[in-house]
Length: 496
Image (tube, rainbow, N blue to C red; front, side, top):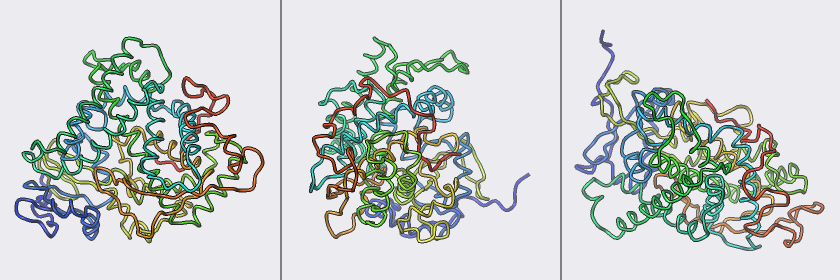
């Protein structure tokens, strides 16, 4: 029986400003966040045109959650994932519903809480090494610094730190080229994307080099499959007992896709979140002072101990609030696998939906003073699972959310323990909107902290600190520490 209240997608209001042929591509390219914010008055749905095609943007948190939870109908797909798939193939974050369950089962052991506990020691080493390499008065490209930090941590957790410094440098540069190209390639019509411009050639070269690097690592590890207690070893050893097609393990191609997925996801988005968090502390000195006091109290004048992370309440809330203001995945797309009704609107198979964490996170009816950086808004409760979605939700929620949150809180603690952060100029910094809300080009100044404390405090002589690239005393050189408690992680729970 047909619901007589159902309307077609064509009856959903069209966002103003669409141009012939281009649709809303120009405002999306010129100022994407302003365009998205202009749609906040639509409380249910609004249509947007991306070139010749039309997509429906879902603006309601309950409907957004409904889309996330029913991935059999609302599948990964659309222009964002089409472009990302060019690089990572059918990895966990881009594969279709038909492939997802098996891949999720095979990848899940790599992100078991016990594994995150071990990775925390790696995060602490990488964060302390990076923070110790800076000098008083430095003006830093903080995004580049955080990319270097998360690259080192990701390399060690994934590959036991087996890549050379030159390979890491090249991989970092290639990743920057690839990520910066995603959004523009998403907005540009297909034929124009293939024009042999210098930017297109740089993108293709970077993509091929990074893929070749990962494929080489996978081949070497297949030849020597000893368990190195890292993420790649876990992926290689994973067995899917529920496989119905005899594919109980990941083959080489699948391993390469998953490794690229976790490499790009583990490095770039966490680095951007950290850069924004440090920027927000720099321009909110009172919050920074409170976080310094908390850090001094938690660490007690000693070195960075990842087992103390659960005590870092304000650090966790800073990360949570940063992800609200600047969710890395600020826009997502889904494709319908069959006809479906959503919120009284009949959507046809093949239709594209747009979901925007940024839009929901900045709605004044959901968050009082939504543009205000206020970590204490999280004091009285956990994030609402429908209105707060930096990692998505449902079966396709980011598998590495606790990995990223743990790394971010540990790195933030390491930086604040040693340094006071200051803005480099008077002009507010605006995001470089790409597939992520990029912080590329953000400069912060450092002032060495000299809090009262005994030996081992941040005011100690620099010679007592571990040099850049070294592990702290008694830390194992060959992988994560096995001796951490199972509750290491972000104290603010971002869970279903």
